[in-house]
Structures are given as structure tokens and as C-alpha cells.
Image (cartoon, rainbow, N blue to C red):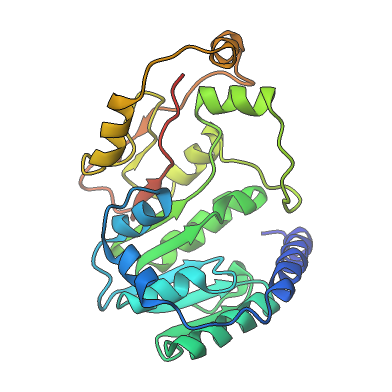
Length: 277
């Protein structure tokens, strides 16, 4: 990574998330046991639960939580039995995460690290799972270098599990075009696009990018299927406009499959359910 540009990028990220952490500095409370049970299994109806379900049984696993922020996911990972290393560039977010871990009695199970990824002193091939919740889309200027690092820290039989916003669904692209929404973002972040996944696939094996018609959640999400079946099929002016509108960009990525001998770590990329008009 270019030292000057990377340092400035990390400084911007740290300042932004320091500000968010400062707003919640006093919001330290033990992790509710009901929350832990929710992410241990259950219906897994929503993307966050699905994200955790993809990781499977975490007992005894070594997990790297990338871009851990204030430690919400790190606490859940540790409560579910993992040995967690949680890394972030925001000193205030890391401090809040440590306070939350102490309040929950999980401080011995989580090692919080405040560092940019490229200067982090982490051992190669030391993690069963490398994961992140809405992280990679902050790394786009250095995505190739980032994926190389993440893959190097993953065990040969390990996995990378990330949940990210994407710009692959034609319907969502139309909605973004028709209904602009203000969001608080850091400079340079955007949803992942087809070329970003091509970069990712150079460093990991088994990357499958669902198209608009592909199911994302597994068959056990029966409630969602039943709700869809029972929902009346009505047409509306908005749906007609969505059908008529052209996507902001064309082309959907399809599949980048590694064969069974691919030495790269496997990537499980969790995506929200496709929205179909």
C-alpha cells in the first residue's frame, strides 16, 4: 500500500468512527443472554442472523473480526465460544469495545487491537474464520492488498465470511436511482460492484455471486417463503416505474468457482435477499 495515501485513508476512517463511538461512550451494558441465544441458531430469518449461521459452530474456533468497531460482533462471537481477535482503526471504538467486554465478562476471550490492517502484527495462517460486517466497502482503494492480507491470516482450511452492501441487484439499482436517500458515509465508500468481486476472487476460492433470480438464504427460511406465497400479487405505479427504469449500469457478475484443489481460503459472502418486482 502507498504509505501516504493509506495513512490519510485510515486517519479519515478513525476520525469518523471515533465520533460515533464518542456519542455512545456511556452506553456500556452487559450483553443480554437473549441476544446471545438469538444468534446461536433460531430462525435465522434476517441477514445478521444468517451471517452468524454461516460461520457454524464457533466453539474453540479462532476468529478475526475485521473492522470490529465498538465490539458488538466480537462480543457475540466470544459468547458463542470463539477465541476472538478484534481489530479496528478507531481508538475510541476499541476502548468502548474493551469496556463492553469487561461488563459482559468476556474480556479474557477477546483481544482488541487498534491498528491499520497493513501494520497489524498477526500471524499467518492463524485464524479459522476471518469475518467482517460492512467492512470491505470501506477498503475499495486498497481492496487487492486488503484481500491478500486477509487470505494470508486465514488457515488453509479456514473461511472468510463477510456481509457487505452490493450494487449487483438491478431492482435495487433502479430504486437508488429513483429514490435517493441521504446516508452518513466515510469518504470513498460505496457498495461493492462486479469488478470488486473479480479482485476478491483472485485471493479466495469458491466465490459465488448470486444473480437476481438466485436464492441467497437457505431453504430453512420457510417463514419468508410462506409469507411470499401468501402475499397478494398486486401491481402498482411504483412497480411499473421500476420495470421501466433502466439500471444505472449493466451486467451482472455470475460465478467465480474454485475447484476442490484450489489452495485459496473459501469465501462465504452473505447477501440480503434479492428484491424482485
